[in-house]
Image (cartoon, rainbow, N blue to C red; front, side, top):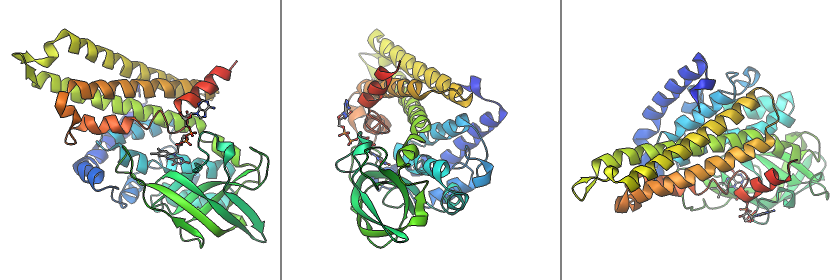
Length: 377
Ligand SMILES: Cc1cc2nc3c(=O)[nH]c(=O)nc-3n(C[C@H](O)[C@H](O)[C@H](O)COP(=O)(O)OP(=O)(O)OC[C@H]3O[C@@H](n4cnc5c(N)ncnc54)[C@H](O)[C@@H]3O)c2cc1C
Protein backbone atom coordinates (compact mmCIF):
# COMPACT_ATOMS: atom_id res chain seq x y z
CA UNK A 1 0.00 0.00 0.00
CA UNK A 2 1.08 3.60 -0.37
CA UNK A 3 3.75 4.36 2.27
CA UNK A 4 2.29 7.87 2.62
CA UNK A 5 -0.16 6.28 5.08
CA UNK A 6 2.53 4.52 7.12
CA UNK A 7 4.37 5.41 10.32
CA UNK A 8 7.64 3.90 11.59
CA UNK A 9 5.91 0.73 12.80
CA UNK A 10 4.57 0.07 9.30
CA UNK A 11 7.99 0.56 7.71
CA UNK A 12 9.60 -1.76 10.28
CA UNK A 13 6.93 -4.41 9.70
CA UNK A 14 7.32 -4.19 5.91
CA UNK A 15 11.07 -4.81 6.21
CA UNK A 16 10.62 -7.64 8.71
CA UNK A 17 7.86 -9.33 6.69
CA UNK A 18 9.97 -9.10 3.53
CA UNK A 19 12.89 -10.80 5.32
CA UNK A 20 10.64 -13.52 6.73
CA UNK A 21 9.11 -14.25 3.33
CA UNK A 22 12.57 -14.33 1.70
CA UNK A 23 13.68 -16.93 4.27
CA UNK A 24 10.57 -19.07 4.71
CA UNK A 25 8.56 -18.97 1.47
CA UNK A 26 10.62 -17.83 -1.51
CA UNK A 27 13.24 -20.65 -1.41
CA UNK A 28 10.45 -23.25 -1.24
CA UNK A 29 7.85 -21.65 -3.52
CA UNK A 30 8.32 -24.09 -6.42
CA UNK A 31 8.01 -27.09 -4.09
CA UNK A 32 4.90 -25.66 -2.40
CA UNK A 33 3.33 -25.02 -5.79
CA UNK A 34 4.25 -28.25 -7.53
CA UNK A 35 3.86 -30.62 -4.55
CA UNK A 36 1.11 -28.60 -2.84
CA UNK A 37 0.18 -27.64 -0.23
CA UNK A 38 2.79 -25.63 1.70
CA UNK A 39 4.39 -27.04 4.89
CA UNK A 40 1.85 -27.01 7.69
CA UNK A 41 4.57 -25.90 10.14
CA UNK A 42 4.58 -22.54 8.40
CA UNK A 43 1.50 -21.44 10.37
CA UNK A 44 3.42 -21.77 13.63
CA UNK A 45 6.46 -20.01 12.20
CA UNK A 46 4.27 -17.15 10.95
CA UNK A 47 2.55 -16.99 14.34
CA UNK A 48 5.88 -16.88 16.17
CA UNK A 49 7.06 -14.10 13.86
CA UNK A 50 3.91 -12.15 14.75
CA UNK A 51 2.71 -12.08 11.16
CA UNK A 52 -0.70 -13.59 11.86
CA UNK A 53 -1.49 -11.34 14.79
CA UNK A 54 -0.39 -7.94 13.48
CA UNK A 55 -3.84 -6.37 13.37
CA UNK A 56 -5.68 -8.26 16.12
CA UNK A 57 -6.13 -6.66 19.52
CA UNK A 58 -3.74 -7.47 22.34
CA UNK A 59 -6.36 -9.23 24.48
CA UNK A 60 -6.44 -12.09 21.94
CA UNK A 61 -2.69 -12.19 21.44
CA UNK A 62 -2.43 -9.69 18.60
CA UNK A 63 -0.10 -6.73 18.25
CA UNK A 64 -2.89 -4.15 18.13
CA UNK A 65 -1.96 -2.82 14.71
CA UNK A 66 -4.26 -1.25 12.14
CA UNK A 67 -5.53 -2.23 8.69
CA UNK A 68 -2.29 -1.06 7.03
CA UNK A 69 -0.25 -3.47 9.16
CA UNK A 70 -2.50 -6.29 7.95
CA UNK A 71 -2.28 -5.20 4.30
CA UNK A 72 1.51 -4.87 4.50
CA UNK A 73 1.69 -8.55 5.53
CA UNK A 74 -0.76 -9.55 2.78
CA UNK A 75 1.42 -7.80 0.18
CA UNK A 76 4.67 -9.17 1.58
CA UNK A 77 3.39 -12.76 1.45
CA UNK A 78 2.78 -12.45 -2.30
CA UNK A 79 6.48 -11.54 -2.69
CA UNK A 80 7.20 -15.18 -1.79
CA UNK A 81 6.20 -16.08 -5.38
CA UNK A 82 3.46 -18.40 -4.15
CA UNK A 83 0.00 -16.82 -3.97
CA UNK A 84 -1.38 -20.16 -2.76
CA UNK A 85 0.86 -19.99 0.29
CA UNK A 86 -0.13 -16.36 0.92
CA UNK A 87 -3.87 -17.08 0.85
CA UNK A 88 -3.54 -20.33 2.79
CA UNK A 89 -1.64 -18.62 5.59
CA UNK A 90 -4.25 -15.84 5.42
CA UNK A 91 -7.39 -17.96 5.95
CA UNK A 92 -7.49 -16.85 9.60
CA UNK A 93 -8.37 -13.35 8.35
CA UNK A 94 -11.85 -14.52 7.32
CA UNK A 95 -12.34 -17.27 9.91
CA UNK A 96 -11.45 -15.30 13.06
CA UNK A 97 -13.41 -12.01 12.67
CA UNK A 98 -16.85 -13.68 13.10
CA UNK A 99 -15.53 -15.27 16.32
CA UNK A 100 -14.41 -11.86 17.57
CA UNK A 101 -17.62 -10.17 16.43
CA UNK A 102 -20.09 -12.68 17.89
CA UNK A 103 -18.18 -14.87 20.34
CA UNK A 104 -17.97 -14.80 24.13
CA UNK A 105 -14.68 -14.10 25.92
CA UNK A 106 -14.37 -17.83 26.56
CA UNK A 107 -14.87 -18.64 22.85
CA UNK A 108 -12.34 -16.00 21.83
CA UNK A 109 -9.78 -17.54 24.21
CA UNK A 110 -10.57 -21.09 23.06
CA UNK A 111 -10.66 -20.50 19.30
CA UNK A 112 -9.14 -17.16 18.27
CA UNK A 113 -6.07 -17.08 20.53
CA UNK A 114 -4.48 -20.38 19.34
CA UNK A 115 -5.09 -19.42 15.69
CA UNK A 116 -3.46 -16.02 16.14
CA UNK A 117 -0.50 -17.75 17.84
CA UNK A 118 -0.17 -20.10 14.85
CA UNK A 119 -0.92 -23.18 16.98
CA UNK A 120 -4.17 -23.94 15.17
CA UNK A 121 -5.47 -23.49 11.64
CA UNK A 122 -8.82 -21.83 10.99
CA UNK A 123 -11.02 -21.76 7.91
CA UNK A 124 -14.32 -20.11 7.03
CA UNK A 125 -17.00 -22.44 5.67
CA UNK A 126 -19.88 -20.63 3.99
CA UNK A 127 -20.06 -21.78 0.37
CA UNK A 128 -22.05 -24.91 -0.48
CA UNK A 129 -22.51 -26.87 -3.69
CA UNK A 130 -25.87 -25.07 -4.09
CA UNK A 131 -25.10 -21.63 -2.59
CA UNK A 132 -22.18 -19.27 -3.18
CA UNK A 133 -23.02 -15.67 -4.09
CA UNK A 134 -26.46 -16.29 -2.62
CA UNK A 135 -25.25 -16.69 0.97
CA UNK A 136 -28.81 -16.77 2.28
CA UNK A 137 -29.36 -19.90 0.19
CA UNK A 138 -27.24 -21.93 2.65
CA UNK A 139 -28.94 -25.27 3.38
CA UNK A 140 -26.59 -27.05 5.79
CA UNK A 141 -29.00 -27.57 8.65
CA UNK A 142 -28.36 -27.56 12.39
CA UNK A 143 -31.18 -28.96 14.51
CA UNK A 144 -31.09 -28.50 18.26
CA UNK A 145 -31.00 -31.71 20.33
CA UNK A 146 -30.43 -30.93 24.02
CA UNK A 147 -26.94 -29.50 24.51
CA UNK A 148 -25.98 -30.17 20.89
CA UNK A 149 -26.85 -29.22 17.35
CA UNK A 150 -27.08 -32.07 14.85
CA UNK A 151 -25.56 -30.77 11.62
CA UNK A 152 -26.24 -32.22 8.16
CA UNK A 153 -25.05 -30.84 4.84
CA UNK A 154 -21.94 -30.02 2.78
CA UNK A 155 -19.58 -27.13 2.14
CA UNK A 156 -17.26 -26.68 -0.80
CA UNK A 157 -14.28 -24.63 -2.05
CA UNK A 158 -13.11 -24.03 1.56
CA UNK A 159 -9.60 -22.52 1.71
CA UNK A 160 -7.43 -24.34 4.29
CA UNK A 161 -10.39 -26.65 4.96
CA UNK A 162 -8.37 -29.85 4.45
CA UNK A 163 -6.01 -29.03 7.31
CA UNK A 164 -8.12 -26.72 9.48
CA UNK A 165 -8.52 -27.45 13.20
CA UNK A 166 -11.51 -25.16 13.54
CA UNK A 167 -14.11 -24.18 10.96
CA UNK A 168 -16.24 -21.10 11.38
CA UNK A 169 -19.31 -22.56 9.71
CA UNK A 170 -22.54 -20.96 8.51
CA UNK A 171 -25.56 -23.19 9.11
CA UNK A 172 -29.32 -22.91 8.89
CA UNK A 173 -31.23 -23.03 12.16
CA UNK A 174 -34.44 -21.32 10.97
CA UNK A 175 -36.54 -20.76 7.87
CA UNK A 176 -36.05 -16.99 7.41
CA UNK A 177 -33.53 -16.53 4.54
CA UNK A 178 -31.14 -14.23 6.40
CA UNK A 179 -32.54 -14.41 9.93
CA UNK A 180 -32.42 -18.23 9.93
CA UNK A 181 -28.63 -18.36 9.68
CA UNK A 182 -26.28 -19.12 12.58
CA UNK A 183 -22.53 -19.59 12.94
CA UNK A 184 -21.05 -22.61 14.67
CA UNK A 185 -17.40 -23.37 15.30
CA UNK A 186 -16.95 -26.98 14.18
CA UNK A 187 -13.79 -28.67 15.34
CA UNK A 188 -11.77 -31.19 13.40
CA UNK A 189 -12.40 -34.69 14.74
CA UNK A 190 -16.04 -34.04 15.68
CA UNK A 191 -17.91 -37.31 14.93
CA UNK A 192 -19.98 -36.97 11.77
CA UNK A 193 -17.63 -34.36 10.25
CA UNK A 194 -15.41 -35.47 7.37
CA UNK A 195 -13.20 -33.77 4.84
CA UNK A 196 -13.50 -34.83 1.21
CA UNK A 197 -10.70 -35.04 -1.32
CA UNK A 198 -8.57 -31.90 -1.78
CA UNK A 199 -9.94 -30.09 -4.82
CA UNK A 200 -7.65 -29.64 -7.85
CA UNK A 201 -7.79 -26.11 -9.18
CA UNK A 202 -6.57 -23.71 -11.88
CA UNK A 203 -4.33 -21.68 -9.56
CA UNK A 204 -3.52 -21.20 -5.87
CA UNK A 205 -1.89 -24.65 -6.03
CA UNK A 206 0.02 -24.29 -2.76
CA UNK A 207 -3.19 -23.79 -0.78
CA UNK A 208 -5.55 -26.60 0.13
CA UNK A 209 -9.20 -26.30 -0.88
CA UNK A 210 -11.75 -28.64 0.68
CA UNK A 211 -15.15 -30.20 0.43
CA UNK A 212 -16.62 -30.74 3.90
CA UNK A 213 -19.37 -33.17 4.83
CA UNK A 214 -21.57 -33.18 7.92
CA UNK A 215 -23.67 -36.27 8.62
CA UNK A 216 -25.43 -36.31 11.96
CA UNK A 217 -22.50 -34.23 13.22
CA UNK A 218 -23.08 -33.37 16.90
CA UNK A 219 -21.74 -29.92 17.72
CA UNK A 220 -22.02 -28.62 21.31
CA UNK A 221 -24.34 -25.64 21.72
CA UNK A 222 -21.39 -23.94 23.45
CA UNK A 223 -19.74 -23.75 19.97
CA UNK A 224 -22.47 -21.43 18.71
CA UNK A 225 -21.29 -17.87 18.01
CA UNK A 226 -23.83 -15.32 19.22
CA UNK A 227 -27.54 -15.96 19.26
CA UNK A 228 -29.39 -18.22 16.86
CA UNK A 229 -30.16 -16.17 13.76
CA UNK A 230 -27.11 -13.89 14.02
CA UNK A 231 -25.08 -15.77 11.40
CA UNK A 232 -25.46 -13.18 8.65
CA UNK A 233 -23.98 -10.57 11.01
CA UNK A 234 -20.94 -12.85 11.29
CA UNK A 235 -20.70 -13.00 7.49
CA UNK A 236 -20.93 -9.22 7.29
CA UNK A 237 -18.17 -8.80 9.90
CA UNK A 238 -15.77 -9.92 7.14
CA UNK A 239 -16.97 -7.78 4.25
CA UNK A 240 -14.73 -4.72 4.48
CA UNK A 241 -11.45 -6.24 5.63
CA UNK A 242 -11.69 -9.33 3.42
CA UNK A 243 -12.22 -7.18 0.33
CA UNK A 244 -9.35 -4.89 1.32
CA UNK A 245 -7.09 -7.97 1.73
CA UNK A 246 -8.11 -9.25 -1.67
CA UNK A 247 -7.55 -5.84 -3.26
CA UNK A 248 -4.10 -5.54 -1.64
CA UNK A 249 -3.22 -9.07 -2.77
CA UNK A 250 -4.25 -8.18 -6.35
CA UNK A 251 -2.13 -5.03 -6.24
CA UNK A 252 0.84 -7.07 -4.99
CA UNK A 253 0.42 -9.68 -7.74
CA UNK A 254 0.20 -6.92 -10.35
CA UNK A 255 3.40 -5.31 -9.00
CA UNK A 256 5.27 -8.62 -9.09
CA UNK A 257 4.12 -9.42 -12.64
CA UNK A 258 5.09 -5.92 -13.72
CA UNK A 259 8.58 -6.18 -12.24
CA UNK A 260 9.16 -9.56 -13.86
CA UNK A 261 8.08 -8.14 -17.22
CA UNK A 262 10.13 -4.94 -16.96
CA UNK A 263 13.22 -7.06 -16.39
CA UNK A 264 12.40 -9.53 -19.17
CA UNK A 265 11.92 -6.91 -21.88
CA UNK A 266 15.39 -5.50 -21.25
CA UNK A 267 17.01 -8.97 -21.49
CA UNK A 268 15.09 -10.52 -24.37
CA UNK A 269 16.16 -9.46 -27.85
CA UNK A 270 14.33 -9.64 -31.19
CA UNK A 271 15.16 -8.02 -34.51
CA UNK A 272 18.53 -6.97 -33.11
CA UNK A 273 17.32 -5.03 -30.10
CA UNK A 274 15.81 -5.59 -26.62
CA UNK A 275 12.06 -6.05 -27.10
CA UNK A 276 11.45 -3.25 -24.57
CA UNK A 277 12.67 -0.80 -27.23
CA UNK A 278 9.57 -1.41 -29.35
CA UNK A 279 7.06 1.37 -28.81
CA UNK A 280 4.12 -1.02 -28.66
CA UNK A 281 5.71 -2.87 -25.75
CA UNK A 282 6.74 0.34 -23.97
CA UNK A 283 3.17 1.58 -24.18
CA UNK A 284 1.85 -1.73 -22.90
CA UNK A 285 4.22 -1.45 -19.94
CA UNK A 286 3.10 2.15 -19.39
CA UNK A 287 -0.51 0.98 -19.19
CA UNK A 288 0.41 -1.89 -16.84
CA UNK A 289 2.19 0.56 -14.52
CA UNK A 290 -0.74 2.97 -14.63
CA UNK A 291 -3.31 0.32 -13.72
CA UNK A 292 -1.18 -0.98 -10.84
CA UNK A 293 -0.62 2.55 -9.52
CA UNK A 294 -4.34 3.42 -9.76
CA UNK A 295 -5.37 0.28 -7.91
CA UNK A 296 -2.71 0.80 -5.23
CA UNK A 297 -3.79 4.41 -4.65
CA UNK A 298 -7.52 3.64 -4.60
CA UNK A 299 -7.13 0.68 -2.21
CA UNK A 300 -4.86 2.74 0.08
CA UNK A 301 -7.35 5.61 0.27
CA UNK A 302 -10.26 3.29 1.07
CA UNK A 303 -8.12 1.54 3.73
CA UNK A 304 -7.27 4.92 5.24
CA UNK A 305 -10.94 5.93 5.34
CA UNK A 306 -11.73 2.61 7.03
CA UNK A 307 -8.95 3.28 9.57
CA UNK A 308 -10.61 6.63 10.35
CA UNK A 309 -13.88 4.85 11.07
CA UNK A 310 -15.82 5.84 7.94
CA UNK A 311 -18.35 3.49 6.37
CA UNK A 312 -16.60 2.22 3.24
CA UNK A 313 -18.87 -0.73 2.41
CA UNK A 314 -19.46 0.49 -1.13
CA UNK A 315 -16.04 2.03 -1.71
CA UNK A 316 -14.37 -1.23 -0.80
CA UNK A 317 -16.47 -3.06 -3.40
CA UNK A 318 -15.24 -0.50 -5.99
CA UNK A 319 -11.65 -0.86 -4.78
CA UNK A 320 -11.84 -4.64 -5.00
CA UNK A 321 -13.19 -4.52 -8.56
CA UNK A 322 -10.58 -1.93 -9.60
CA UNK A 323 -7.72 -3.97 -8.11
CA UNK A 324 -9.04 -7.21 -9.62
CA UNK A 325 -9.26 -5.59 -13.07
CA UNK A 326 -5.75 -4.16 -12.74
CA UNK A 327 -4.39 -7.53 -11.67
CA UNK A 328 -6.17 -9.38 -14.50
CA UNK A 329 -4.92 -6.86 -17.08
CA UNK A 330 -1.33 -6.78 -15.84
CA UNK A 331 -0.93 -10.56 -15.50
CA UNK A 332 -2.46 -11.12 -18.95
CA UNK A 333 -0.09 -8.61 -20.59
CA UNK A 334 2.84 -9.99 -18.58
CA UNK A 335 2.31 -13.40 -20.18
CA UNK A 336 2.00 -11.78 -23.62
CA UNK A 337 5.23 -9.80 -23.27
CA UNK A 338 7.06 -12.95 -22.19
CA UNK A 339 6.01 -14.65 -25.46
CA UNK A 340 6.29 -18.46 -25.40
CA UNK A 341 8.22 -18.32 -22.14
CA UNK A 342 5.15 -16.75 -20.51
CA UNK A 343 3.27 -19.98 -21.17
CA UNK A 344 5.86 -22.18 -19.46
CA UNK A 345 5.41 -23.57 -15.94
CA UNK A 346 8.98 -22.51 -15.08
CA UNK A 347 8.00 -18.87 -15.63
CA UNK A 348 6.57 -16.98 -12.65
CA UNK A 349 4.13 -14.90 -14.71
CA UNK A 350 2.46 -18.10 -15.98
CA UNK A 351 1.61 -18.91 -12.35
CA UNK A 352 0.56 -15.36 -11.48
CA UNK A 353 -1.78 -15.34 -14.48
CA UNK A 354 -3.53 -18.49 -13.21
CA UNK A 355 -3.56 -17.28 -9.61
CA UNK A 356 -5.08 -13.94 -10.63
CA UNK A 357 -8.13 -15.64 -12.17
CA UNK A 358 -9.65 -16.42 -8.78
CA UNK A 359 -10.01 -12.84 -7.63
CA UNK A 360 -13.02 -11.85 -9.78
CA UNK A 361 -14.78 -14.88 -8.21
CA UNK A 362 -13.71 -15.11 -4.55
CA UNK A 363 -14.76 -12.83 -1.71
CA UNK A 364 -17.84 -11.67 -3.62
CA UNK A 365 -17.78 -11.87 -7.42
CA UNK A 366 -17.25 -8.85 -9.64
CA UNK A 367 -20.94 -8.99 -10.57
CA UNK A 368 -22.04 -9.07 -6.92
CA UNK A 369 -19.74 -6.09 -6.18
CA UNK A 370 -21.43 -4.22 -9.05
CA UNK A 371 -24.85 -5.10 -7.62
CA UNK A 372 -23.79 -3.60 -4.30
CA UNK A 373 -22.34 -0.48 -5.93
CA UNK A 374 -25.33 0.04 -8.23
CA UNK A 375 -27.89 -0.12 -5.42
CA UNK A 376 -26.08 2.50 -3.35
CA UNK A 377 -27.75 5.90 -3.14
C1 LIG B 1 -10.08 -21.19 -4.81
C2 LIG B 1 -11.34 -20.83 -4.08
C3 LIG B 1 -11.27 -20.58 -2.71
C4 LIG B 1 -12.45 -20.28 -2.00
N1 LIG B 1 -12.39 -20.14 -0.63
C5 LIG B 1 -13.56 -20.09 0.07
C6 LIG B 1 -13.55 -20.13 1.51
O1 LIG B 1 -12.50 -20.18 2.15
N2 LIG B 1 -14.74 -20.13 2.16
C7 LIG B 1 -15.95 -20.08 1.49
O2 LIG B 1 -16.99 -20.10 2.13
N3 LIG B 1 -15.98 -19.99 0.12
C8 LIG B 1 -14.82 -20.01 -0.59
N4 LIG B 1 -14.85 -19.97 -1.97
C9 LIG B 1 -16.12 -19.85 -2.65
C10 LIG B 1 -16.35 -18.50 -3.31
O3 LIG B 1 -16.58 -17.52 -2.32
C11 LIG B 1 -17.53 -18.67 -4.27
O4 LIG B 1 -17.08 -19.49 -5.34
C12 LIG B 1 -18.05 -17.34 -4.80
O5 LIG B 1 -18.69 -16.63 -3.78
C13 LIG B 1 -19.05 -17.53 -5.96
O6 LIG B 1 -20.04 -18.44 -5.62
P1 LIG B 1 -20.38 -19.65 -6.62
O7 LIG B 1 -19.11 -20.35 -6.93
O8 LIG B 1 -21.47 -20.46 -6.00
O9 LIG B 1 -20.89 -18.97 -7.93
P2 LIG B 1 -22.40 -18.51 -8.24
O10 LIG B 1 -22.91 -17.76 -7.07
O11 LIG B 1 -23.17 -19.69 -8.71
O12 LIG B 1 -22.17 -17.51 -9.44
C14 LIG B 1 -22.01 -17.95 -10.80
C15 LIG B 1 -22.01 -16.69 -11.68
O13 LIG B 1 -23.26 -16.02 -11.56
C16 LIG B 1 -23.05 -14.69 -11.16
N5 LIG B 1 -24.14 -14.24 -10.29
C17 LIG B 1 -24.69 -14.89 -9.24
N6 LIG B 1 -25.66 -14.15 -8.68
C18 LIG B 1 -25.73 -12.99 -9.38
C19 LIG B 1 -26.52 -11.80 -9.30
N7 LIG B 1 -27.43 -11.63 -8.34
N8 LIG B 1 -26.31 -10.84 -10.20
C20 LIG B 1 -25.37 -10.98 -11.17
N9 LIG B 1 -24.59 -12.06 -11.29
C21 LIG B 1 -24.76 -13.06 -10.41
C22 LIG B 1 -21.73 -14.69 -10.41
O14 LIG B 1 -21.13 -13.40 -10.39
C23 LIG B 1 -20.93 -15.68 -11.25
O15 LIG B 1 -20.41 -15.04 -12.37
C24 LIG B 1 -13.68 -20.19 -2.70
C25 LIG B 1 -13.72 -20.40 -4.09
C26 LIG B 1 -12.58 -20.73 -4.76
C27 LIG B 1 -12.68 -21.00 -6.24
